[in-house]
Each structure stands twice: as structure tokens, then as C-alpha cells.
Image 1: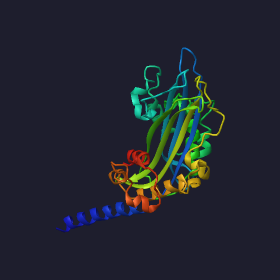
Image 2: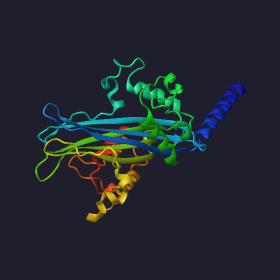
Image 3: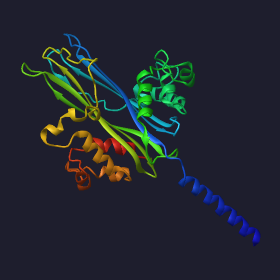
Length: 320
């Protein structure tokens, strides 16, 4: 009996130690960074004009020494077309490169592996690195020997810039090393043909979310959206300037212009939306947007009155 009691007491001590360790786990800084590009080409009599955007997003959990503990990395590569008659062409591709998996099609052209496999390898390399050490991995653009040996031979400049930016932006959070860290995207398209009075626009709205979660509930969250506007004239000539500032709605701040119509700015409403998501599950967040387009009273009361369907979709994808 005494032996059995000793075993039970020892087991209880071990359980208590694990419980205490979990409660006292180091809180990590949470950060999000991105590096986005846009470009366009003219249409001619034989081929359509083309526009492309690469929205590279990284989320990180960073320790007190500025070293990466966890990282999530993805890219939405949006491609659109417009004709030499100034007509916008619809696209059906709204998945990120990571979501596409084998559909992205690098497997047949690369001895190393598909894009998502190379990203997994790249993420493994940046663990334990600081922002400066991450930037040093770029090398000549295709990564240093450490990156290539790990199994990543794609161009990594914009991807690693996004990671470094995320580390620099990291701020205190409730996340720990045991938290899940994921990205979610929601992409929509709007089409306007060119006329003599107005230029055409083939636009992609790329909404993205980064979420740290535990037990299926949000601990830390960041949402943003970038509008890739591929404008063109009636002859299908591109009006996109790849050297011009290409900013997210948060980066635009007050310049986004919602305050001009008497509403809170987009970033302020996004902040309010994020606040309602903390502590919620994916199902609870999905319920914020009704089937009839209405927004839950909790969200509106918090100060978010914009349509949240894209935010909801992106965040729900990222909660695990």
C-alpha cells in the first residue's frame, strides 16, 4: 500500500511540474511582415496584356533575444489579363502557392521539390535566426549555401525580406512555443472594361491574416489587405508603374480615405475586428458574417462596420 501511495504521489508531482511549466511558458513576441510587388505588360493584336502581383507574407513568433521560434510563410501570385480592346478578363485562380501544393507545378521542373516543400525547408533554416541573420541568407538572390543545402533553390529575396520585416515588427503577445502559427488568405476580383471616358481595371483584393492560436482559440492576430489594381486603356496598354508605392490598406493609414466619408479608417476598423477575434474559435469567427451579409452586433459595437466576409474567411483559415 505504501509503495502504491508513493507511486501515486510521484505521478502527481510529475503532473504538477508539467502543469507549472505550461503556465510559466515564455510569452513570445508576434510579428507579421510582407514584401509585395506588382507589374503589367501591354496587350497587342495577338496576346492579351498581363498583370501580376506577388504578395509575400510572413508571420513569426520571436523570443526575447529577437530569435525566431516559429515562422509561417506564403505567397499569393495573382495573374490577370486584359485584351487589346480594353476588356478585363476574369481569372479563377485564387489559391496561394502553398495552398496549390503540387498544382503549382514546380515538381516537374525542379530536382529539389515543389514550392511548398522548398518553403518548408526555408522555414527550417530561419528558425533561431535574428532579422539581420535572415537577411544575410539572401545571398545573390537564390539563397546562401545553407539555404540551398537545406533544399530551397528558388528566389528567396522577397520571402526573406518578409520574414525579416516580421521579426522587426514583433510585439509582445500571449503566444508561446506551443502555439500554432498560421496564415490565411481570401482573394476576390473586380472587373471594369476601359472606355473613352475611363480606364479599365482588373483588380485583385488580397486579404490576409496571421494568427497564433492554442486549443483552437486566437491568442494573437494581424489582418491586412492589399488592392492590386491593374489599370489599362482602351488599347490594352498597361498603366501600372512597378516602381510606384504598392501599399496595403494598413500602410496607407488615413490616406486610404474612409475618413473622408465620415467613417473610421480601415485600419481602425480592422483593429476593432481583431479585438473581437481574440479568444474565439474559427466557428465563432465565421459566425461574425451572416449569410445575408449582415455583421454580428459584437463586431459592430466594437467599432467595425465594414463588410468582414474576406477578413472572416482569412482568419478562420488561420485558426487551428
